[in-house]
Image (cartoon, rainbow, N blue to C red; front, side, top):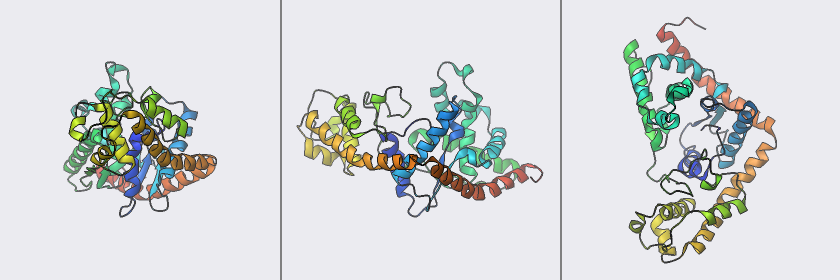
Length: 325
């Protein structure tokens, strides 16, 4: 996850909560991708602060450095070394098809950084440097995972090896897709210019309650069935958030609130969110009071990650013909 802002409720329900669960039964490697972050210019002091804040929030959510590896991307040089090899393996035509680049670059494609253009190759290196086989991603990242597999396949073919394994995406069916509080047709994003569009994991209780009260709705009461929410995106979004944060189905939520107006519903939703998010916020704040400890945890995670990645990338370099380091 990039340290480009405080994770939102959408990040938490869509990804972070599952990352915490997957620590049971998997060797998890969790990377704060500060190199990806600088594809758009970042204030250096702010980038350092945001990287530490992201680490604190991940730890507050339940990422356990005793069971998993948590580090910042730039601490492990193997990522950049392998990314350059992949820059030379990937084809321009493949990158031209990346829809996220088109969305982020907009109409001014000639003015964006080359890093933004080739960052899917770095993302592929983030994965293949560990010979990872399972990667938790959202639907919007499936295309990048397909590219990572294409790169691995071409590398293996070009050099006559069976070195990089195929990656499988982990996209749980139950993963909540959380939309903007201001527009139910747009995904909730930590980079949205409007802070009112999202719940941040460092919002205080009053802010959370206020944002939910102000969340866009429609004048009709809550229906009895989810099918009746099909053309009501804002209502469907709030019902989905309530279901996800209380580990219930949308049907169960509607069974409780059918026929109700949004006033009482929003009050209960705000209470549920506050109860869930406040422990994360408090733990993150406790950790941020000692940034030296956060740095130590990330550096130790970087050393552990490097022990896995460095031999793999050194072998990739040998395969392409580089002399030993």
